[in-house]
Image 1 (tube, rainbow, N blue to C red):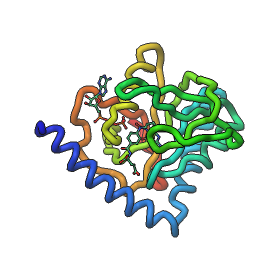
Image 2: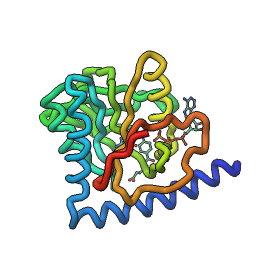
Image 3: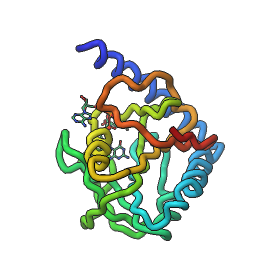
Image 4: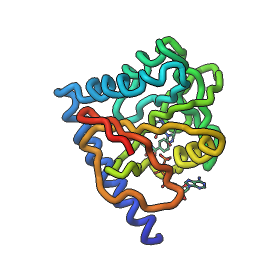
Length: 190
Ligand SMILES: Nc1nc2c(c(=O)[nH]1)N(C=O)[C@@H](CNc1ccc(C(=O)N[C@@H](CCC(=O)O)C(=O)O)cc1)CN2
Ligand SMILES: Nc1ncnc2c1ncn2[C@@H]1O[C@H](COP(=O)(O)OP(=O)(O)OP(=O)(O)O)[C@@H](O)[C@H]1O
C-alpha cells in the first residue's frame, strides 16, 4: 500500500467516525434541516438550472428537503452508477418519483430520464476549508466533475455536517475541487 493510499484510508476511517457522531447529534438539533434551509437559499438564485442531489446512504446528511424545494423551481436529478471507474449518470427526480435499490446502496429512479446537471450537490465523508473533499474512494464524483467541466462551468457544492471538517484533504491532482460547502452552520465559498 502506498503512503498516499494508507493516508487516505486512515482519513476515511476518521471521517466515518466524525460523520457518525455528527449524524447522531443532529437527531436532537435539526442540523440536517438547517443545512437544507441554507442550501435551498444558496441555490435558489440558480432557479431553472438543472441540479443534481443525492439519495442519502448511511449517515450522510439527508438533502431531500432541499431537493424537494428546488424541484419546484427547476429540474432535480440523482446519481446513478453506470460502471466502476466511469462518470456518474444523473436521472430526473421529484418527490413522487418511484425509486428502486441501486447497485451501491443508494436508491435510483425506477425509470431513467437522463439530465445534464449544471449544479451538483455532492455527498462526502469529510471536507476542508480549501474546498477539498474526501469520498468513499470510488473516484465517481472526481471523474464526473472532470468530465462535466470539460464542456462548461459546473458548480459543485458539498453538503455536510459541520463536524465533518478535517484539514489537509487536497492530496491528489485528480481530486475535483468544490466551489462551496454548506453545513448547518455556514456557507463556505472557494
Ligand atoms: N448518497 C450517495 N449516492 C452516491 C454516492 C455517494 O457517495 N453517496 N456515490 C459516490 O461515489 C456514488 C455511489 N458510489 C458509492 C461508492 C462507495 C460506497 C461505499 O463504500 N459505501 C459504504 C457504506 C457507506 C455507509 O453506510 O456509510 C460501503 O459499502 O462500505 C457507496 C457509494 C453515486 N451515488
Ligand atoms: N478524473 C479522473 N480520471 C481518472 N482517475 C481518477 C479521476 N479522478 C479520480 N480518479 C481515481 O479514482 C480513485 C479514487 O479517487 P478518490 O480517492 O479521490 O475518491 P473519492 O473522491 O474519495 O470518492 P468519490 O468521488 O467516489 O466519492 C483514485 O485512484 C483516483 O486516482
